[in-house]
Each structure stands twice: as structure tokens, then as C-alpha cells.
Length: 283
Image (cartoon, rainbow, N blue to C red; front, side, top):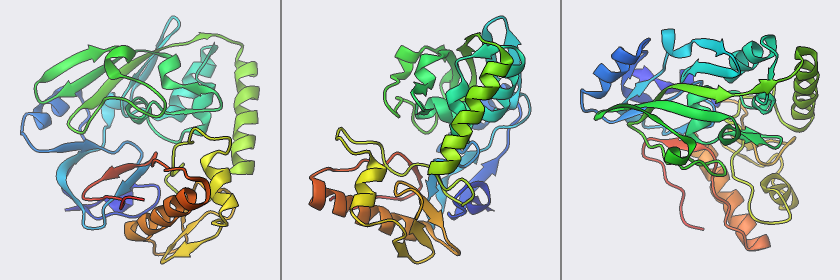
């Protein structure tokens, strides 16, 4: 069994029932036909894996499924391609519109899965279509088919994003570089980029305060349970402070939701994806 803590940015989680690293569309289709529950982990960011593990076949895409190419104003990328690589290729080609992804340390497939976004941009604004495989077959889906909305898509485990086409727009490479440099500086100043986290914990609520500001006002910065702590830098991040378990992170999330409800009457909704038998208690 493969211990998934090695493949998550937080560094927690138990073993997968089975683990595979397919390198082609055909390999993924063959794996899906086996009939096992399937989940894809990308770069392991935005992911919280149960300590007891996952009773599923877990896929980490490689090979041609990480390839990136430019065709006119369209960037075509494998579902396993890193956002950073895609952004670099787009800049080289003088194509803008994907700069927001500088703040998303994940893959194209993961970005589509949650309609990832930052600094005013998201995948729904650039995605033309995505090639998605299931046990029943493979086909192209549009943003409307995927049901993209704020940090959400209709994709579920058992569906694997194999490839995507993003439509970008001409922009001078130096201009793209300057924007990305500015976004990275903002991110570094505000977020614990040098700590092991899974990214943002909660979606921003329909409230004048963001999730981070709300939890900061609740006095949660630096709050620690076991080996996990709410970041002293940004209260909507949980850090592995040494020997953290997923249970520690979940306990912090439970306390954060409780305080937000008591202090502001707001039910925070988690942005991080759960994998395995994980459930937050009702607030």
C-alpha cells in the first residue's frame, strides 16, 4: 500500500488501497474499467486525506498526461500538468489570462475540479473544454457541462480530467512576468508559502469579512491542536507544525467553524477536498 502522506502538501493521510501513475489516456481508461472506486490527487494540494487511508484506486497522472502545447491562442494541457508549467509556457508564447494561476500550486485537472481561482480570475474564465474519462467512456465537456461556479464543479471521484483547452489572449511576455511577480509578492506577504499547508481551508462566505479575516477576529491565529496549527500569518490556512495528523487539522476546522458560527452566525464551508472517510461534525 502507498502512504498518501508522501503525496500531499500538508504531509498527512494514510495508505491508498491501490496506487497507480498512468502516463496515457489508454492507461487511465484501462484502470477505470477495473470497476474500483477512483480518485485523482494531482500535486496533493487542496487535499485532506483520512488518517486511516482511502479504500480506492488513487491516480497520479504522468507522462503525456502532463504535456503542454500551444496552438494559436489555445493552451492544450494534460490534466496532470502543473499550473506553474502552463503559466510559463503561456508567457513564452505571449499569451495572457492565466496569470491568476501563479497563486494556485496545483494541476490543470485540479483547477478544473474545483474551478480554482485567485486574484479575480478562475478556470471558468479561460476553459474552452475538458476531456474527462469515466468507467463508461471518455468525452469532451464544456464549462456549462462541468457546472463551474465559485470553487465548484460537478465533477466527482471516478471522473478523471485527462486534458484541457484554455483560450488565452495576446499579451507581452514582460507584462505577464511583471503581473506574476506582483501576484507572487502579494501571496508571499499574506500567506504561509514556506510552510506545509493544503491551501485555503474555507470558502469565503457571503459576508463583509473574508474567511481569514473572520477567523483572525475570532482569535484563532496560531491556535494549535496536536501537530497542526492555524497559521499565525493567515487564519484561513492550517500548517503542519510537526507530526500533524489529518485528525488534528479536522479538529482545528471544527473549532474554526464553531467560533465563526457563534461570533458571526456564519457557517463556513470547507474549500479543501476530503479523500477517504472524513466528515466534519455539524456546527
